[in-house]
Length: 141
Image 1 (cartoon, rainbow, N blue to C red):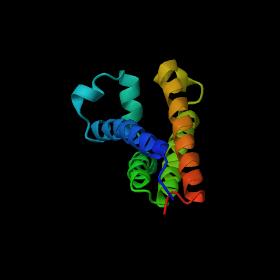
Image 2: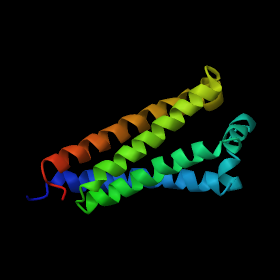
Image 3: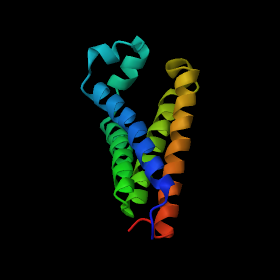
């Protein structure tokens, strides 16, 4: 089947979008002061106190999204699975935020960051659904 033009558009845009997540993850995990210094002391303590399992799910979210974008551009049916892993990683860490912080999550992260997290979830869900639809139409092999 001929590859639809929108696969290339969504693939490239998702790759650029997900590279932002990779940047955030690497700057945080490498504890780059010029990046981490922009956080409040409370935010820094929250990220410094991440349990190992939460870091693992964060990594799954970030690297799964990057893999999904690359696999989508390669027209691989495994793109949907990679995006699913990414969505799970994102959801687990979002649940971790609210389970550990409760209503204080709004004060800790700020409304803008929480709105961005909601956008991340919508985009991740959309990418998974898109890749799944392309696999079902046999655009992905």
